[in-house]
Length: 186
Image 1 (cartoon, one colour):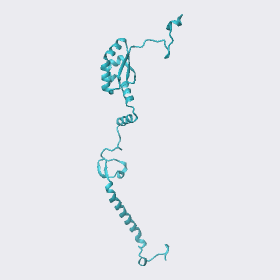
Image 2 (tube, one colour):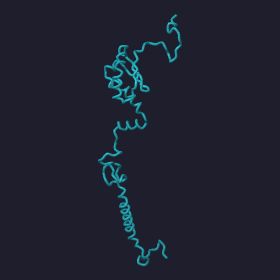
Image 3 (cartoon, rainbow, N blue to C red):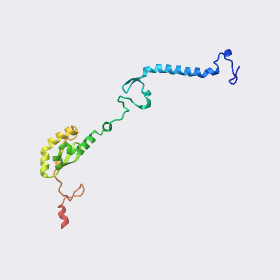
Image 4 (cartoon, rainbow, N blue to C red):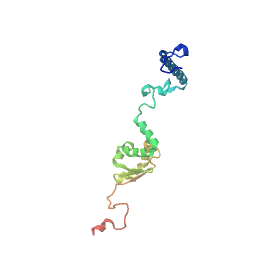
């Protein structure tokens, strides 16, 4: 019986001499790695347009010459995807109508009318004068068609035109019947 501390004779017990052990271990590890690699070749698939490359084997995290989901994306496509994922399509379309009013209707109409609100498909326009309010009421179908082409169908269903706002003595949403501001002057 021998212990680990005592040297043994290789010829008597059939063991490999101590000098050859690291070489045999390295050979065995290499053989095991080759066997594993042969088994994994069937799992390899296309990555970034390159056949036979395992996604985990891409060095440095670079995708190569082909397009890949890890490549930098354009900001517009990312914002569009965010708007779609969050369900903000109608809100974005409404904001587009308000923000691009002059480009949609043209400079002449935009100089004399401004959008006040767009709620539930009803666009409220404030005209510069009563004459422009009448003109806008006549142009409402054309404006609505142009808005449908630019912002999408169904964003603006009706257009309500208001004339210029006259000075009002009313403060707040409620009102008491009476003679109005004349009561305060005597």
